[in-house]
Every structure is written in structure tokens, then in C-alpha cells.
Amino acid sequence: MRWLLLLTLLAFSLSAKDLKIYFIDVEGGQATLIVTPKGESMLVDTGWPGNNSRDAERIATQAKKAGIKQIDWLLITHYHTDHVGGITTLMDKMKIVRLISHGPNTETGKNAEQLSRQYAEAKEKLQELIVKSGDRIPLKDVEIEVITARGNVLNKAAAIATGAADNPLCGAATRKDDDPTENARSIGFLLKFGQFRMLDLADLTWNKEMEVACPLNKVGKVDLYLTNHHGLWASNNPALVHALGAKAIVMNNGDKKGGDAPAIDSMRAAPGLQHFWQLHYSIKAGKDHNADDPYIANLTSPGGFHFELTAKADGKFTIVNQRNKFTKSY
Image 1 (cartoon, one colour):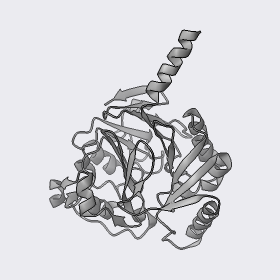
Image 2 (cartoon, one colour; image 1 turned 90 degrees about the horizontal axis):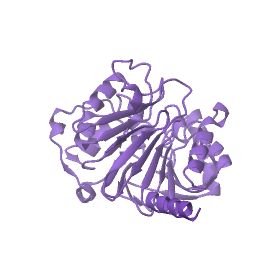
Image 3 (cartoon, helix red, strand yellow; image 1 turned 180 degrees about the vertical axis):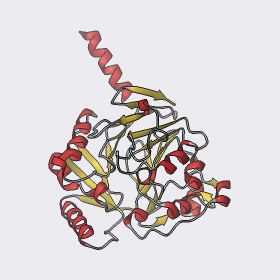
Image 4 (cartoon, one colour; image 1 turned 90 degrees about the vertical axis):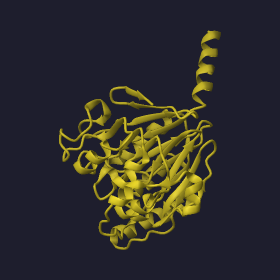
């Protein structure tokens, strides 16, 4: 019995040195839970409202499995329903300590006003941190630098300190129509844990991605890239994605949301990429464009399976598909 206790304590001490990231399935929204080696947590977005509290329940269940009793930081990347809509329900499910935003909603209209009211009600009960590009989110054990916020992008001087480099892909890059929505105002960040680097730019769209990538790739190389905008071709500009050199890409799509075939094909062709992971099989992309089944968390809907990433300070990381326990190490 004593040896069993010692082994348990040893296993805990070893795992406590690792960074954990859970890509929770919220059917084409975002809910990414980050847990530091010391147990501090940051949740990126809350998924959708409604559906019998489906997304809030999935987040709370995963938080409990991860061994945390509260969300220390809730980062709302932008004011769209699939990212902030679940905030009220989630607050009914578990304790949230602090909010992070880019400031007030920049959109108007009935839906935007409803989301703004929900966020304002949450803000009355919690502490709020408003961030801008170049700021750092003060989690312990990890460095989280804000790359984009409210339409502004990290400046050149700060980017050079981050690991920026000239981007030869910019010569062939083309622009699309400017995006006036909250997507282009998304908070995007670069997470660093020792040698491990992950990029999450939320729903940033094509032309703003070019500002991140051209003429200087302002984030440098990363190990993991969470696809922008759920894998839509309005985002995931090759000038950015192909410059990142990511070993793994995770797409937070739904079966009928995100996952455009041109975007998938472009991302899967990115230099240095070893594996492309999808939270859902994309119906519109079809079998010729989706990843192989082991790399897809949910083959049908409703889903609920997630990916679990474990990163070590030396840069090594592992991704586990919770549907089938399929595992790859990098």
C-alpha cells in the first residue's frame, strides 16, 4: 500500500511539470482549456448557448477531469455567439475568477446587443482585464503574448523580440475584401512553455493574417497551430500558415461549420507539417479532403470527444484523440 502511494505521488509530481491543453468540442465554436503545471487555468471562449447547456456542461466536465475547480482566466476572443454565447450558462456551472477581452463589442444590431448585455452582466460579477497587442497575460509557468486585439497587430519591435523573421511567401500573397466584423478584431495569442510554442488567433481573417505574416512573420515558428476561424477559407492565409512551420495543426470545426476543402488542402500542404487533426469530420469537405479517421475526434454528430495535448518544457508534446485513444508524439 505504501509503495502504491509513493508511485501515485511520483506520477503526480512528474505530470505536474507538464502543460495541458484540452481542445474541447463545442460543435464548431471554440473552447480551449489551458492548465499550467501549477494548476492555474485559462479557458479560451465558451462555445454556444442553448442546446440544453451542452457546451457549458462539456467544459465543466473536462475541467473537473483536469483536476481544476475554477477557471482563473476566461479569455473572450471576440463577440460572436459561438465564442461568447455560452458565458452565462458556464458561470452557472462553475466558478470563474477573471475575464479578458479586447474591450466593448465593435458590432451593432440585435444579436450583437444581446451578446454585449450577456458579457456586461458577467463583467459586473468578475474582474476584467482589457488587453491590446503586445500585452502579456499573467499566467504562471507560461508566457502568453497577445499578437492581435481589436484589429491591431503586434508592432515590429515587439515582433522581433518574439522571434519574427522575413517571410519569403509574402511576394505571392493576395488580399481579399476587408472584414468589418468582430472576427478581424479577435484576440490572438502566442503561448510559450519552455521550448513549446502554440498559436491561437481565434477567428482572425485573411487580410489581418497578412498583417501578422507580411512582410515580417511576426510570430516566427510554432509547434502547434490552432486553425483560424474553424478552418474556413476566409481565413488560414497560406502566407501565414505556411510560414509557421507547425508540426501539428488542430482544426476546431463542426461537421457543418468550418472545414472548407481549399483551406484543409492548403493547411495539409504546409511545410514541416506532420499531422492534421480535426475535431469533426467535415461533411462539405468530403472524404477526399478530410484527415484520416484516427486524426478526427468526432466522425458523426452530436460529438463530444476532444483532443488532449501534453507539452513538456523541452518542446516535446503529445496529442491524444479521446475518441479512440490514438496518440502521436512530437
